[in-house]
Image (cartoon, rainbow over the protein chains, first blue to last red):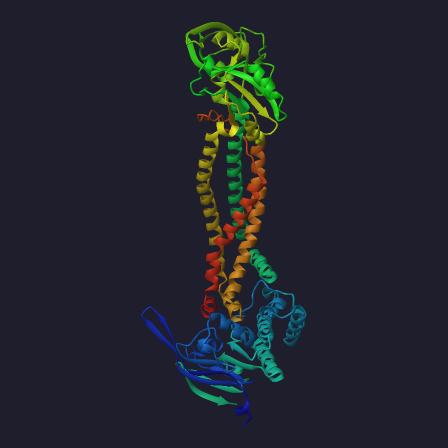
Length: 233
Length: 406
């Protein structure tokens, strides 16, 4: 009942996504309905090619559905143009990618600060928030290191700090532990779970790692572009 | 904006050699432009000043009927009592030199060789002869009362194998259409460093030129130099008379200004070629950067950077390349221009009718040309980056992220 009263952060309504390469059509999503509510820690699971990443990209407004709609905080994002989608992403959605997606020429501090800069935050606020987030992921002592001076686990923690720096409504993570060893993967998931619990920010992450699935409060299983199962733990 | 430049600086530092080579290409392009512009400017202003110094003066007073192309020695085509006219002109404050000259044509014969020459009867004591005095290679300058001596240009002397004190026969057409002939002694050889002039000109005192041509106390022109060439039009307007034509250096050298306009138009094509090559290097560098950094572009787009922000990122890189290139261009081009300003470029006997080119072109770079070329180079470099910047800005975030080979 409590879950029912929470605000809907994102909703995907009858979404399809068809990729066309030459004459070949690939249906990555075949009509997906999904609603994610505030504060959820949801795992999208399924085998390779099931449509997890495509669904995350639609929710993250990085891509648009071939048919159907995507809503963010109740707003229909399907009708937004490219710049409007960028604006919505910038203030609302944080991303964590599988490949430690940091800007290699920027330090850990500058990477975390970048979304705040893009959101027009003032210098003092940027500094305070950046240090707060680096502290939250345990990397204040690595603030002025560049990505190539950090381990894979540390880089992914910087990515988590960056995703959370703007106080997003929603954090999307695509296979966040896929390139990490067990210990680093566990650390990253612990941090994500703690931030979810402490700040109430909504997480949706794609994975097929059973250890990671164990962290989820809700597991959505995709197969062949369709949701096969949706279970709350 | 500061962030864009900070990121741009660091991005360029990722591949230092490529970034430096790109800036160097811009620099070399700009250096070439500086050199081309300064050589053209030097050539044209050099030719103009040379022609003014040796031939046209800032002003020339001529009889109303005088025709430069005919070299007429008829009395009605000459200025009577020219020294009086010259003395009157000298009373004007702007006039530094005013001297009569008689221009005649003749044939110089040595043994069995002969050559057509232009005879210039001059007042040897006039300051207008400074270029000839300074250019004396051998012998002495002629004296006003010397009735047997002439000066010859060094190339003419070389072609006829003449030396100081050699005797030559000079055949001259006179005022009444007859022919006069006399044996002269070469008093000296001069050079004006202008092959066309030095090959065909001989000097003798005005009084002797008047005597041999039967143009007693007459001159073809009054050669006038002013304190500043910009005064020519004002002075010409002040001394207009029905008896004489007053021609300014500008009127006498229309061909040079026309030639300069033509050369400028031609050089614009060369500038475009140089800038085109430079622009291609910059475009190529930045297109490579876009392909190498596709994933990063995707990340920036994912965290909310708009297309114009991504575009600004690449424009900032182009601006830094352009800044480095312009600085390199000023250093390389400045050094090359300085060298050719001092030592010049030897071009030999480069003859164009009506224009007295020296045998060496000296570069001459103006501040205006330097600033213009720096701005043009900068703007062209930025324009060259528009394509890669647009390419980056138009990448779809999801495609850019996939560009990482995920």
